[in-house]
Image 1 (spheres, helix red, strand yellow):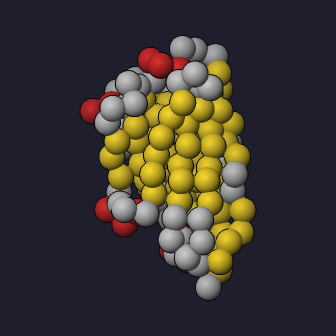
Image 2 (tube, one colour):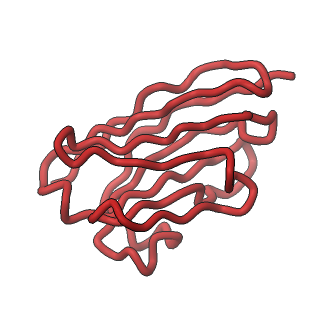
Image 3 (cartoon, one colour):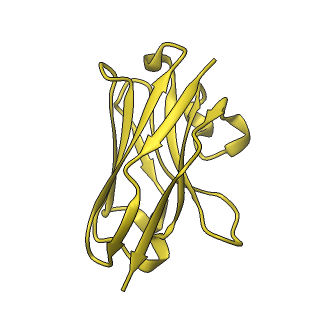
Amino acid sequence: QVQLTESGGGSVQAGNSLKLSCSFSGRPFSEYTMGWFRQAPGDNRQFVAGIDETNSLTIYRASVEGRFIISRDNAKNTVYLQMNSLKPEDAAAYYCGATKQWRLVKVQSKYEAWGQGTQVTVFS
């Protein structure tokens, strides 16, 4: 079964950057679309970014477009989320997930596995 482990969270000042990593194991990584979601206290988990299994297609929620970059290294079984120009509203627990359905990358229920999450705090 798929196992995911996020890392790279932390506390940063607004305007600065963080890079999250998600390590994948248990199945062939190249078969999976990967997504990043986030959840702030009291809010529902929301889609942030997704990348297809071939590393050709990416998609972002509107509020992070142009600031966040999702990427993957299929040789290292790792997906990344580079977060630039961070804002206080980006603060949340960030989760990576794995799915085989690129067309439903924004749909949480279509994901096979989730990591435990990594916390991002942004102070002004």
